[in-house]
Length: 388
Image (cartoon, helix red, strand yellow):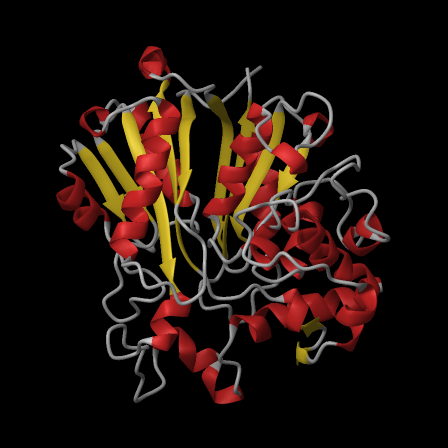
């Protein structure tokens, strides 16, 4: 197989408690996830020499990103030869791409990649975690706020409505994402929402922004997820089954969201297959970003599992993307069911499935190849993961 020039592997995964309005400090949640990932990989903190995160600590929006790479380095005593944390990358899993780049250039051997979110707790404690304050319309908001489009739900809905008008996407088809997520979340002991969702309940839910209803949206969550990315020549230091990063792709498509013709998922999905000899037919499971359910449809089209405009029909009835279907989707519950882990949950679950550690939600057979994604709106990242 022709792969990316440098070989990097995900060798450890960890997650903190996942909840809403947690009292535990976000740095401690991050520490919890790191400890679990280190134990999973069989590594010690002394072997870690890199840290990568998205988007770094955001002082003006601490709920969205309360922990920076530098804070984690100081708190855990990491001797870092390389680290990075910024929003100017191709979405959340771009932090993994950056880590792989550092490994490729010999700047690190074992890199902790993390994403910590604290939005639910922050909303309940505004004095400690002040929400963003804007006294004037400027920057990217000048293209949206004057039209009362102040939510990513509104920005995403315009693309979903194009599929409704141009390609015949129905709410019943769109519902299959949320129904599948919730069904899988019921089998995940860490999932935030472990209650069944029926089509009748979905169809009766209040609309948020047409065609997206309440159940098409993820919800604020407090949690941390960690992936350890290691160099191929350092695998003898690792005790867990390593999962190879077989290909990576990422795109930024009009970061302002203003008048972009297509979501960034489309060029990203196409680019992924240019960097490997694997094809969509080789994929055993897809873990696709679902901050809003329509993103899943766009990713399925973008990655070539169906044609553009065919995503709704592809998932109609839900059998194809079910846990026992031909292309199991978001087997941990996605963000709609398991909680808004903001992209990193999809890579975490891909490793779980490829190692055969899914328990009640483990897909059948011997899965060896997975695609996981993050973002999909104005910026997007896709990873192709393989078990050798």
